[in-house]
Image (cartoon, rainbow, N blue to C red; front, side, top):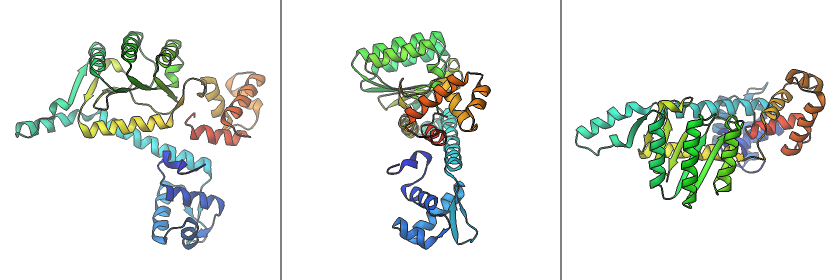
Amino acid sequence: MEGNALAVLGLSPQEEAVYRLLLRSPGIGLAVIAHACGTGEDDAAAALARLRDLGVVRAADDPDTFSSVDPPTAVERLARLRIHGLQSEIRQVASSRHLVDRLAEDQRAGRRATVSELQRVEGLEQVIACVDELSFFARDERLTTHPGPILAAALDAVRASDLKYLRRGLRMRTIVHTDALDCPQVDRYTAELIGQGARVRGTTGPLERMVIFDRRTALVATDPDDITRGALVVRQPGLLAHLLGLFERRWSESCAVPDELPTTAERQVLRVMARVDKDEAGARELGMSLRTYRGHVASLLRRLDVPNRFQAALAARERRWI
């Protein structure tokens, strides 16, 4: 790994340097850590304190020395904490209706009126109409996510709006979850977008349902599991900046569609590989032939560019495939 590879899991360059040093040299003390990382003892102590809080570094037998937890445990723990934090953030945004009352108080007090910066849209038809209207007035770029299966009626409307938008020569970036790509209609729709010049990436990780127009207006589903219930139109700068940051993080964690993403069967094999040593046991657990199971394993090792199953599990977690 080069640079701050663990930034996606929330570690700073200094914290990553300390953790990786302890992987190589367990049982060393603060002075040695500071010297090896080229920093002062105060900074090294601060990095150690946070790594201990995150549960990836612990005191060794001698309380003045430290060691790291193993990489699979560390990556899984950091990923779980990171995902939990991001999910909490998006829930706060999605439940931000209460901000309207506070903004209304500002309006009544004669301050800058911002109630219109948050607008609720009810029902699937109004959501589709809102997307179409905002797309019509967009002049730069549209950012879109598709976290899961899409209703046929909604997919037809979204497809028509997207293709019309792209034919105007505007830019589009779209993130599609593999759960959505399992649907043949969505898979064909994604191929169409790519053919019209959209940049499309896929992910197996958490994905919130949103559309952002020209980085000035966002549409967020009020219920991430049911788009038919309505959406929140967001123009408030602070909330919009948060949504843009969330989209860019999800984009950086995604990969190209369709060749790089694992199929549903391959993701099942990856999960079993992380727990089961014997191919026979893994094939039996998934109800597939040993030959098919081994074929998936060999293909995954080549695509992940790793020599063994243990490293394949680590690489798959790093790519958020499992």
